[in-house]
Length: 620
Image (cartoon, rainbow, N blue to C red; front, side):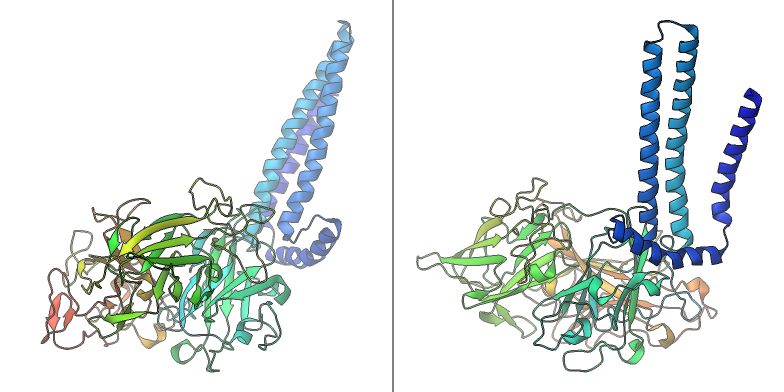
């Protein structure tokens, strides 16, 4: 009997091992059937309360975990009963032997349950990869080089920025899709049945599609995503009703903006080289973001005296919701989630200056600029000032908490304070938790002088260095650089983040026209401390760094004709301004001082004409 029992156990273990191994040999048609069965199982699971809006793998995991938990409970009862028999055997050999056997079997059973739990999770993870619920991001090649198309509208076209960023990884499941356009967008393009009178928030899925990569049949429906937008109709926040992805494995998602997208004036949003629309992908993790945002720095610093044309700048530890952090205050009404007040030094009534709160820098920076003109900068553009010779106080409000902190309460009019993009209310006192108003409000004070600052910003250093053709790895400049190296320029002052756009800082290239819809870029400002490094929270800030993130460069080693190689020229133009609204003109750096006869700096050399970039084509 013992040998037969052992033989049975051996066959059982072999069968279990064979099943686990066979999972990875299953043919693709079978997984197609699994995918097809998902909808039926989803409906059934939702009806029983197991679904909760989750995907097939999560539902299976819940069912199996419940079953294993029940089996584990039975084994525990069996173990307790064996212990009871041992204690009440009175030392009788037969009773003790029986109890020991039961205890041994119970321990083996517990080991099997624990192993089954680990195996199930492993198998579900592999199933997710095979059925494309996870795994590598898929992209279609263009021009024989492998770059995904429908990408060029980011930077060169109508799209300024979006979140999640291109090919982002580890994105929390509760993250919304946020898109910033350079021009106002027709609301009916983004919102279903929106006609200016009907209050609708449903996503227009005929133009905007969000789906697990490779599964367009699972595109979110209009009822599964709500849309909010800023009043200038340039920023749209798309919030799925249920979290993206699942709690078992990472999931890749694709977002498509179709050719039907229109500008407010009715013109197509995508045209010319970018007429195919725009598409990007990102990876969703298995976690939920419950960390509230904090303020990492403010400009001007508290307690100082500054020229009145300084911009009020607030920098956050993470991206914040643009619909609650941007707006206009005018004549006592309008945007109130942030407040700026002025108290004249000589006495008098406290006032709230009119102006606009702008969000930029990948949704991590909010700036306030008044509408009170007080002069012109070196480019001839107006600058705007806070009240002269006044005490200025700034208040950044935390949002009212919902019944599930750190989530803020979202009403029909939006958030009543600052939140991150997933809706966690501001942690203004930086204690690691969201406590809502007034505990988490953030405020500081500074003073203004009676004279504007008109000093233009100057470049201190660039990476790669201009003109030097040596190897980058060996300390050279602009040749043989890594394919993903972002061009950077350090300035002697903090920049006005809202002027750092893909139109004021960009990359020109001699790549052929067929790659035009593959090359993209975005801009970013990093604040610098006195040692020239990226400033940490609380450090004294003395300058700003422009960074241009971009699609991989084309490696010269892939070019057939080595005499003509791809070149990439970063440009910074006069639209770029510093924190005092002074423009980057005349262009200047430590080694290139522009003058009236040579007003431009090109590759660190003065020039009386506009800087040129390569126009000759190369052959991939």
